[in-house]
Amino acid sequence: MLKKLLLLVVWGCLGGYSYSNYYFGSTNNAVGTTYNWDMTNVLPDLYNLKVNGVFYTYTPIKETADNFKVYVQNKNPNGGYTFRETDDWSGKPGGVAIRKAIGFEYIPRELWGTGSIETEGTGTVTNAQVVYTYRYEEGCSSPLDNPNCEGYTDAVLDVIPDTIITNIYNALEDDNVKQEESEVDYKEEKQESEEVKEEDDIERALAINEEALDMGNSISQNQMLQQMNNAINMQSYFIKNIDGGVYNETVVLKDKNIKDNKNAARMGLISDALHEKMVNIQYNRGE
Amino acid sequence: MYRSLILLLFIGAANAHQMSPTYPKWSDSYIDDISVSRVRVFNKRKDVEYYEIGVFDKDMKPIPFVTQYDLRGIKYHNYAEFTIYINNEYKKDALYVCSKSMLPKLKSTGVVSKICSKFKD
Amino acid sequence: MIKDFSYTLALTIIVGIISYGASKSAFALDVPISASVTGSCIISTETNGTYGQPNAYTLTTAASDGGQMPITRVDVTLASAYKVKFTVPNSFSSSPNLNDVVTFTGDTEVSAVSDATNMADYETDKVEVSDYVDEYDLTATGSTWFKHTSVAVNGGSRAYPSGNYTSYVVAECIAL
Image 1 (cartoon, rainbow over the protein chains, first blue to last red):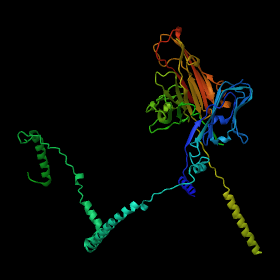
Image 2 (cartoon, rainbow over the protein chains, first blue to last red):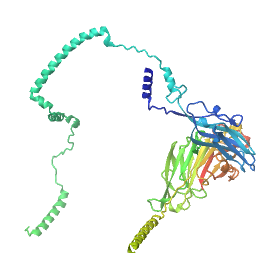
Image 3 (tube, each protein chain N blue to C red):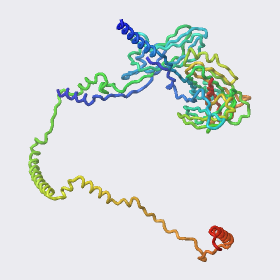
């Protein structure tokens, strides 16, 4: 019962938690001495492996006039082909390599049957390479690696022992603790009663005092806070005195008198006289 | 089954040079008798840091044009846009705009790549 | 009789309205579908070449002589929109001082294709513009690999002076 309960707790804690660590890789050249290969020898034994691409290259050897087709393919164990690519070299010169990369959605390894390069017509294929790219997930070298692994539940149950012996120490049932506890309890009770009495006295005093009402009044509290804020001296943040020194006057008039400009007199006084005359003409003033 | 052709990105670290568009067009600029066009060069060549731009006629002879930088540094995995100004007098002869990679000296048998786009009306 | 006529008239009017509505709802609307198709040409250098030196006066990219052929890959996304032109080296871009005339030979060939049916004829259809320049019309979308050979023989079979020798293959992708 306890075991099942524990398992339930484990499942509850891990509910909704999922591993999503994907890793990618590619195989070695699948083509060996023959142009047929078993995918179990090509694809590595990794968890949840799915193939997402095929790359191949080869060089056809043929005469230009000959008909020649090359098929690069993988059979589907359920019938037909999982992958099949056709290159038609009919009427084309040989000797030029072909390189192709084909991508598709992730196809599980179970659907990848025997791979092969087949030819049709007159010609041969040389320097053939076929490489598969794949994705796999982390874990499952053992069922306990992650909850998605097959056999995870059974493996967890195997790990949990059948009988769980618990020996919980209850300090409250310890005689030594009980004895100490009783002495402590008495002191604490006495202290508590004194504190309660003191609190009662304070409470009564506050209840009588008018200031208690003010303290309880939220509006007056706000006002007090405001006054406290206003009282903060912000001047020191705004006013900064920089010691700069004094600039003394450097211009010195030797004579301490400014003499009239005689040149200006010739020009200025004449124009002044003329101006005066013009003004007087307007007002018929006597000169 | 969805199938697509992947351009062999996992074969090796290919260094690529690309320019677009294939067929740029001239448009009127804000200056009288001057036309303007734009091309973009993408540098995926680790061994190249500079590209040169040029405008040519049908015989690949150079045509006078103005651009801010005709030799421009483009970092790896970056692109640069070239704005080309040409006098309308030369516009009728201008057929190609090309970008060419500039290889540093003392580099044995490198490949200079040059891509030319064609002006079309 | 008047009642029958009224019924007939009402029915006629109703049928008329229905048929009118049907004819009005059967109008055609032209919805234009436009597209802008642009292609691109991407030149990639798969392999930078190196010169091997089988003897004192010969530099070559042949693998058997310790060299390495440069390989260029050209990707096009629009058929018959580009041609590619390759110029193999006909001189050193940098070298020590040479007193003799160096004779360059070289060639470009299709190394691999990504479409057997549409690209296998590229090599036979290429245009040899000159001894050093070859041109290919890229009539199919996909990738094409080109390999370039270069041999430089020093005049008079005299040994090359020591130093660095560089030369470039020029790959041009030109929109048609």
